[in-house]
Length: 480
Ligand code: NDP
Image (cartoon, rainbow, N blue to C red; front, side, top):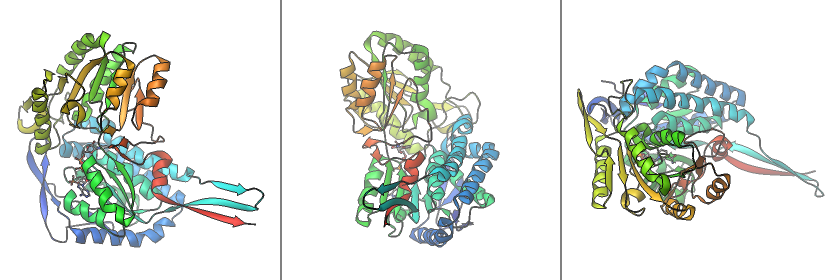
């Protein structure tokens, strides 16, 4: 059994109430460890550790903070294989994906913010004629919370923690109870890198109890949250009376819009990836595919052929393209949407069934599924499924597709395939999304603002936006 503990004040400890829950391996459905079911008392201990570390950490030089963050990054790289295997075992994603994307990105998060904090300058304004100068201080907030989901566990966990500590805050962090393993291992790395005790505290447990205790804590002044839209709305309601600063990165139902004048092969290959990478469990996946009518039939044939060739299998096997879904309840939810599609006159062009992988028959595997929908308003085209399921439908004009693309409650990202510059400019301006990719997908530059509009969230992270979120601006005006 691989049991894990909370990481408080630089040491690993059992939960105060000594309650534990099972941790499942999605590739075979077996329990392989116990995790703490932490309570309010544990959150309090974590808060106190963070609070007592704050004074010293907030006054630690930028160079020293930067050095420690970069050391964490190097240690993650040195432990790539171990972390990738742990992430895969917890989440069901192919080890190859965790090795190529998740863990390197977690390392980049620390390296990037370790460097960015040394470049984070503030403004000054000389009030000419009044003989005064104004300058802005960017001060750390104090103790902040970072709460992240299960789909890109270490990648998103560190996307929050790295800027928070780089900016001089101390952190109480909670990963999803479904995927706690790499967050646990991160504690070891932080100790090895010399991160002072209490700067980062990691608490494991259920969202509704442990997470709830974190968001209700009077003295935790800011919450950076990535997760579902309903949870985000709940956090906003709880936090509002306490005037906590909030960054909410929430769900998506992103359009992938394909015009006939695009580079066809590149679009086709990328569309397979943007539909099914990480079993379709990425908030940025292009889950609604709109194809210009004149290439629709061709696209349908070529896309379905490629999707059928994807190999569903055990995550540790090199040949696997699609691993296991994260949990049994999530698998059931995704399957339910496939049934809903049938009742809405959707046509299943491929997939739609559970897969029994030989030797791992109790794992949570599902075929990559393409549904041709009769209209854009059906539920499978409007609601976030968050699995290996995409919808496709044709469109005739730019205006028509723009209307359909924007007619959802979400506004996270959009992808556009075209070689027409004027159309690119027109559509990028009008698509309701925080991120628009043109002729590519998920090409990330950590300096750029990241986040959504509408039900996809509030606030931006990434680059200096994240450092702004994790600091308070204070203007000082000096008359001379
Ligand atoms: P959830 O909202 O269920 O959970 C996210 C995190 O919040 C988990 O750690 C969860 O804990 C915790 N949580 C749940 N309830 C509470 C609460 N009352 N108080 C405090 N914390 C709580 O999302 P999922 O984990 O299911 O993740 C999938 C969702 O995340 C999708 O909607 C996806 O689109 C979105 N997402 C958004 C991204 C973005 O950048 N916009 C990126 C990635 C995912 P626990 O798991 O233990 O219940």
